[in-house]
Length: 294
Image (tube, rainbow, N blue to C red):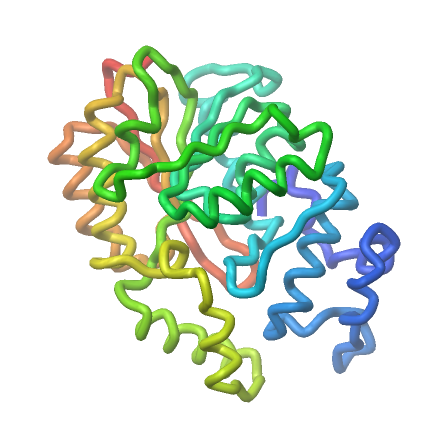
């Protein structure tokens, strides 16, 4: 993990629970006698990440309805720390600079916008095509005085577009981030959740897994999966190359990289791929920019 990520060590669950008492109900002991939570239990994961927001990011309240994607705070923060470091090294931007970022597909959780403002003091805009998710994200911003009226969540009404209609004329951003839906269908996403539960040693209830998928169509799957989604990002980014310094996205599957790199080469973009390892989970960040960019 990034050296500046505060969650490199074991979570201090007792400290977090003092800020969010509901977390205490999910703390258990592992075989070594250490305190942990059941990471296969969505309620436990939700309360853990909510506790992090309340304890470490000055969020006063945070609510996600059942079925919406629970944002793992350490991993989301890791992505933003790499973005900050990359801009500092590649573009010689001081790390204390107040950046302006755009989150494509911010979802109901709006987490990159919250972390960008609360941890880095950046100006953040979130874009989302699902109207209900926009409503939930906006409501969460209103719960906290330091977030209220400082983060803008824009509704992408035309699902054919990603940047178009979201980035306004003459508007400038230092970076974009994206956590694309990486499955190609609901069935594939469902099988992925089953495998995850099996790997965690937990028997799964098909009805329970299905219920947890409520509201997640735009968050977990799309036609063509992450490779096609990222190729769409790249194609559309060309029209905004003078308004964004660096575009970026997470890529979950290593097999997606080949077609993504071909698309970047076709777009005559400069690009880099950064590895991002969080425990047993391996991911990567693809960043690209154009010679005419600011």
